[in-house]
Length: 420
Image 1 (cartoon, rainbow, N blue to C red):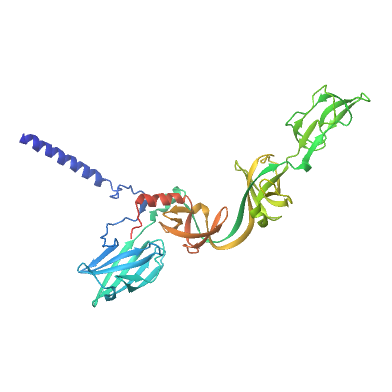
Image 2 (tube, rainbow, N blue to C red):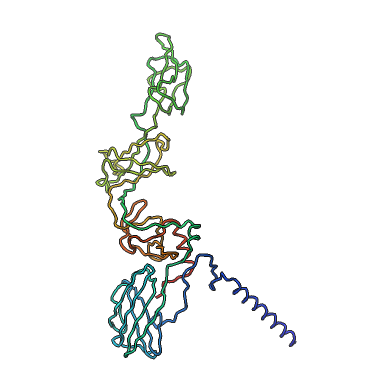
């Protein structure tokens, strides 16, 4: 019995040794289960917490609890001080904090007593990612702490970023278009439509062209025998285009009805519906980007606004004449339009392709060397490609414009938190 117990214990110890060896044998494992092959976020360390949930800094019997308070107010420092585990009157402590950000910016904070804590004199601007220097004085003794408080950042080596298709550019001023989104349809141009009839009553002797066939001006369409002269005469195409209607057969008698309808589709009308609330913003000559539901696109200008409104929708029609030699637009086809109703120069703008959602913010990822770090943005007006930045980004900042979702995924994978 004792031998069996000893044997079992030896087996368990051997298995444990194998597991430990497997965990530490791979130099690429970072200790959190993530492989490190060029993508790595700043590691998070376990930190002591104070009674209010903030980071606890301690020297001897003196301690500070670092708390960024952001409930209902812009983020600000609330610092609690302790001696021997007992909370101190904040008037007894002198405190200064400096935050050094990755781009070299340094934010300085002075503090004043408020209730049972010291309150910082400014907003702790997002992102809360910086090197922290704390200087405190209490009862004639000076205390200093340094630590890193990184979030929303990841390091990606240059060759890995290139291989992943991560593209960057510098933020700066841009021309922003004010866009009105509308819908409409492609229509035939009545000036390019011809209905072909017989000149004299008679009998159809020959039909030379078929429905859907492309023809040129002067092509013979049919041959008719006149009822009066019994002589044959030809009917020729008055314009070039496509036969969109054929209403004739050999042996039939001709009448007043058209025998052929020819449409020249080299130009078509795009008729866009502009609703009542937007009519005052739309003018002749404004530029319109037109796109079919399948993605074919062209640029044109408004050449005519209808003086009449639709009774049902209370909209008017804005007409854009577009070249259609490639037959990208077919009469009756639905289209989308983007009317440029105004333009302004934004002092700072970013590409929409670079913007991602991060926590409760719209962000881009700034690049400094191999470090990519989140920048929380306040955005203004935008168009199809660009959006104005009101705050959160410095002019000239290099930021990711393509494949920024990969940066976001790496940061989220690292488990970086927003814990203050």
